[in-house]
Length: 139
Image (cartoon, rainbow, N blue to C red; front, top):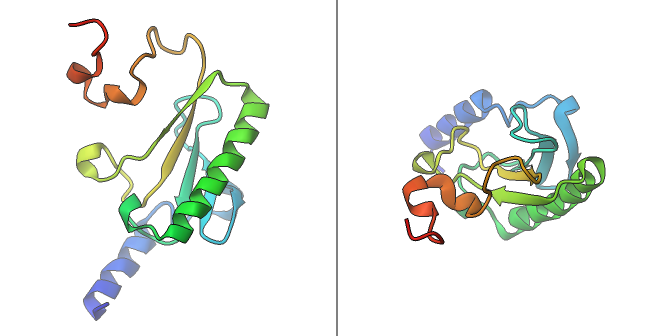
């Protein structure tokens, strides 16, 4: 890595909200990742799984980082299930600005879903492009 690339990474890490989380925000962690509750939850128990290394994309994560994130995802799911009894979950990653990523540090959302939280939940994550989401009614 060049000196200018190292400098840019250090600057990004200093301004990244996930690289500077206070320890009190961390619910659980392992060698490569942390689990926090989302600061702006869309439902009770909304959680984020975040690699400790400052990377922007899931496709930059090592196999060890991906495995660590999935282990915490299982742990978060079990805890949220026990605490909030959701009916289902959405799991997602906004990977890149065009996909809606607003914090340029990889993070995986675990979003608990509850019967009646939206009128018609069919399609789930397909609604990121609304005019293409509904394939079942022939609209």
